[in-house]
Amino acid sequence: MNYDVIVIGGGHAGVEASLACARMGNKTLLISMLAENVGATSCNPAIGGLAKGHLVREIDALGGEMALITDEAGIQFRILNETKGPAVRGSRAQIDMDRYRVIARNTILTTPNLDLVQEMAESLIVEDGEVKGVKSNLLNEYRAKKVIITSGTFLRGVLHVGEIKQVGGRFGEQSSEGLSHALRACGLEMGRLKTGTCARIDASSIDFSVMEKQDGDATPSPFSFRTDRDAFRKTKKQVPCYIAYTNETTHNIIESNFYRAPLFTGQIEGTGPRYCPSIEDKINRFRDKERHHLFIEPQTFENTECYINGMSTSLPPDVQQQMIHSVKGMENAKIVRYGYAIEYDFVDPRELKHSLETKKIKGLYLAGQINGTTGYEEAAAQGLMAGINASLSIQNKEPLVLRRDEAYIGVLIDDLVTKGTKEPYRMFTSRAEYRLLLREESADVRLSGYGHAVGLIDDALYEKVKEKKMQIEEGLQLLQEKIFTPNKEFLAFLESIDEEKISDSLSAQQLVSRKSVDEAKMLLIAPELAKYASYILEEILVEAKYARYVQKQSQEIEKMKKYLKVEIPENFNFKGISGLSKEIVEKLEKFNPPTLQAASQISGITPAAIEILHIYIKISQKKRG
Image (spheres, rainbow, N blue to C red):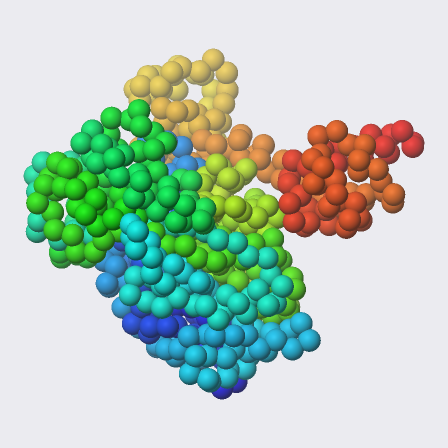
């Protein structure tokens, strides 16, 4: 009954946390209510998307599991925003959700140092402000040096289907009452959030012929840097999704039943996700829209059951039937599972350090929806970091805290622990100030060093990453050193590849940075690059095109690092600073940080506030000087 780490909850955060702890040499216990639901994709049958795909790649680069499972269980792969800049593209995969769960559970069960038990964590054992273990509903007492809670939507979960309310953490599963009370007893600030899911339809009852077919990419790209690309593209079989639309009849049905919608009657108290609203919320907020997209997504490779992405709802069953039957192609749809909303408790993430350890209880870590996030990817990223940091703490090492300029994971955690959230937090590319540096394809180069240092990336893989980095740098140096002059021969060459003439000397890198230059033209301009693999060429091309912008962002980052070391004078008058909110001034006065670095770690102190503070420190120094 004695362990190094106990992980509570077997969702995506729990899977990553427990695997990381076990692989870093800790005797680990994963406690899950239902062993067969470890790794279950409770909502949509997909992994990744805009910004979320970045998180999956970063999890993989650090040695996590999500990308590998996705590559194995994936049934359709697409690059979103492919026509836009590389910084805002996102990989997304439809998955066989049954297969995904089986792979995740089997990985857990076959990993050394990792035990799985089907029990419910009822309370925490806390002594002198430090967690010491967990008590379960079966009266078992498990002791551990660290505890990671990844409870998802199970803390005092309540399900809503129309007027019907039912206690549960997921349909057909119990909620966790005791653990929620235990966290409150620890003095942690908690709140209430809401999320939901849509109805599932018997695929044989859908007329796909009247819908828009949406195929995967002709040459699908795997999520994991560890997956063999060529073999993946040759063997991966894909299935299509379909697009349908709501219409005026659908909207009238929903609108005429607002009085029965838990979202509007006051039955639901928790705040829902702003960027993934229920269909009734969409109709209420955007009544002027003639129609809304619905993505009909297969839940398994056999496509026996479909998920209606875009129609999340908690309306009564009879209303769900009417609105689904009003959609073209679903007139005879048979509902297998009705949609529902779920309310649950979460902990204010400002209660956490950047390591995801709670400030009030030593050794207690939180990850996933318990921290106010929504989405499999956000949960998995936090689970991995909590697992790594709990393990590092056992080894008496400093925590791994990724900066905002290093990873989307760094942005995610920094946003949560410094700003908190009043609604389910979802990752977007717009949240990252340095997104040009945080592209999906560079995740391994950016982060595998950390994964290798903590023991989650082996030597052989890390050598491959270093080789990739070296080849990209070699290719860029070649482009920078290769200079062209506007002589007759070169101007004729430019004309032959349909490129504008030049009047001054320029480097191959400058030429490649033109919008019109693709990979094929780059190889004509610099045939020496042909020795590199296609994925290396892709990165060389992107780096060459955005070299000026990357350099500018890198300079900004160095500037930020430099001035974070700036000392704040004693007895500094924070109230005299224009542009700081009253709340920020109060926090600065309360904690009286000695440096800008220390100020940046205070919950609620934004990067903009740090910049303003830096300006005023410089002004005060000039006055004194």
